[in-house]
Length: 218
Image (cartoon, rainbow, N blue to C red; front, side, top):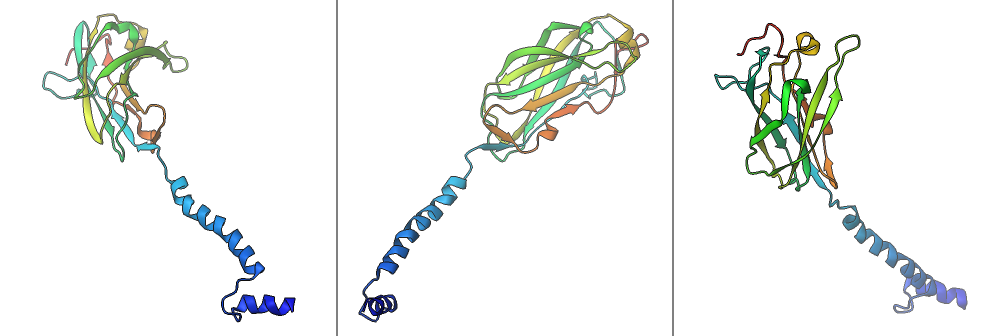
């Protein structure tokens, strides 16, 4: 009789009775359905996704263009325009960092660097650092990096940072030996995923001489 009841219950022949076996299966199935329904929510990412890039250039010449393969002789005030971009897809929260890199710290009056304009974005000085760019067997050379925190959010857009810095007339073995490039870098703050960090940093397209002995002002 027990086996017949079980069989009848499983097949529904007793008018809809539910067997212990069926109840047990249903009890185990319920959590699986709940877990499956919760999976999409757990998998959804709340991390901000951006693709940041930068463009470094040489000073702006008298004709308004960026001079490449040129000689820059002090003392003079050099005007620069670097370009930074958030290529999306999300808005970049406040707290990212841009870095302006200039070769040969000795030839610049470092305290004279001024941000002339940065579109709608507020840039807060965040310190300096120095990088050794000496080539083996060549005169000692360095690059000075100026770091700024972007205190405003950056929508999907491109913006220019215009800045000036005073160059003196000091020549040395490094300036007479190297032709160099400026650098730019744009990095996200904490909690932001940069989809392609490979394009955060950039070098000016061409090399130039700064305070090279035979240099002339373009």
